[in-house]
Length: 293
Image (tube, rainbow, N blue to C red; front, side, top):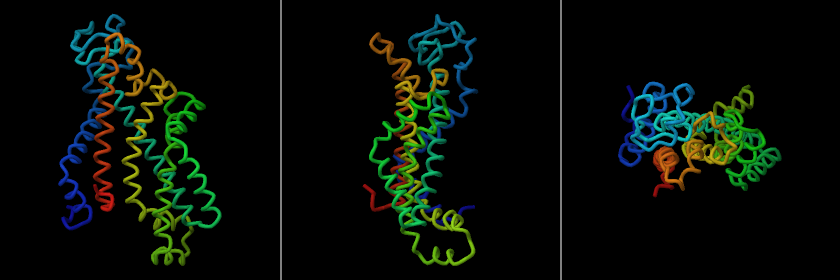
């Protein structure tokens, strides 16, 4: 049972005081639940080619397909039930955002904290490289890397991590630099502990609050970047119906009046990113009250 006077309990109590942030959290949880339960609740498996029929392609919302069920949101250019494609696409978009965000978090935080610990010329060199990367737009850098590596989940994760780890590294460096000269770190340095254990056990854990704030923003950013890259044709292959790929598949039919193929996946993407940002804004305000609006 959680102590009501503990920092965790106070954090959640303050979080609940903001109904907008709570609504955002509820939306995020619901969308994660829909993504996880997609194989059970989706009317159709969009990966099963035997269940698709070209005669059902580009049908409007409410159309009764050859399989006998109602396509509530219509169908796409391949005859897939759009609601099913969105549920499965939501899984892929969340997967890419969470995995890329977690890897960028771990790598960037380690690089930033290590630079703060080492100091001197090595710190200066590492941070100049980080500053140079931050001078380039993330979308441009990820686009170039994704284009060079080719389409695929692994390649896209590498591109997203390469474009985002610098934000974590810069934040971790600033937080770790403030912790580096505190008494508890100096005491740890006087023990036989290896340097990497001092960083992982003492400096990095106490640098987590600002990193958590950056993580919420960067997860939403990774989802948005994945959708953009897939829309531009350098992200996921057409066989992986992420939300960005679904939007790209229907974009060419917008002028012909078949708006639903792109609009509904776009709405799902906007709601997901907006909800994550609402949660991230509240976490930021609580962990750093000076930034509270």
